[in-house]
Length: 182
Image 1 (cartoon, rainbow, N blue to C red):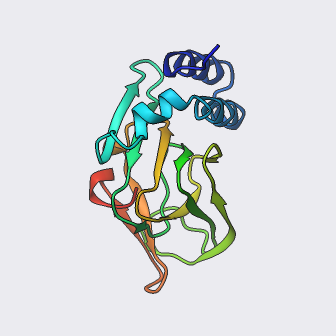
Image 2 (cartoon, rainbow, N blue to C red):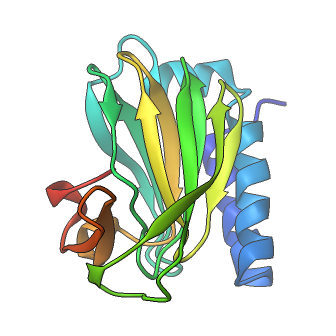
């Protein structure tokens, strides 16, 4: 039987209700990889005929998580950023995304002076997903035509987040997801 978006949503709800923390988010990652094996879903959500840009596929009114389709016409490299009090799971569907993870060395948690160290980098290939937990700092770099499905713990348009200017040694507040990094 084909694994659908509806089945993913029900399973993600169950996972997040049973494990409100990293274990539940890891289950969402595994479920998203399962969803990405459904060629019909991938074609509909992020295939060649899907609209360019980011669009919401589902928003859970009770738990707050959001499923988004990202169809990227142009290449993009984000600065290191976090998702504030939210988390994200990126599931690659088409082409790839190079992911970098960072550790904050200055002991800070807010905007202002900040020093980061890159601790990990890897490539998400089609069918693979990665978890970026609450407060995790990461950067994405993808080529033209890259497409992925992202699940966030909340609608990031309403979450205060940070992006990092490593050259200037600063953390900068992002008041809205539409105003900064992906």
